[in-house]
Length: 172
Image 1 (cartoon, rainbow, N blue to C red):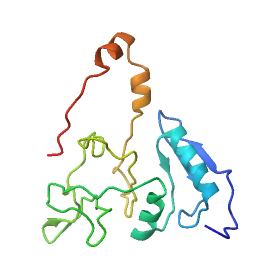
Image 2 (image 1 turned 45 degrees about the vertical axis):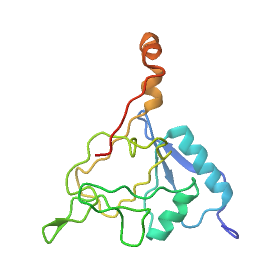
Image 3 (image 1 turned 180 degrees about the horizontal axis):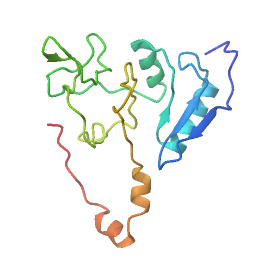
Image 4 (image 1 turned 90 degrees about the vertical axis):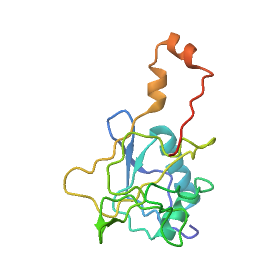
């Protein structure tokens, strides 16, 4: 943002040590300028998954930061019939909390299994943002995998066999 006193393109980025991901420290995502965002975007391209701890974002803050990556999709309709946070169609809740016998999350109250977000679309979004409001003391882990590495480590004969094949993903 204009007038940022902490504007710098040098970020404190620590790779996870795993196959994917890095933690970015010392930023308030509500107050970053174009140069800092460009550095964040470069880190995202290099590490595929970024973790920003200690943020305090309103839904509007989260949407504003997310829009810096490009146009946003509307949240998909989930098994509960909920589509989005009331009045904010870009967001939906992932939760295992049940209130008055009903899950508050758009995905119900169950665990998500391995998946790719919105892969059933002809052009899936290039990214997804998760903003944790409540984290359990144990469990609740979210895992990521590096599909670039998966492809790069496939045997050449298998790569040749699958190039050009298509898979239909169904959102139901």
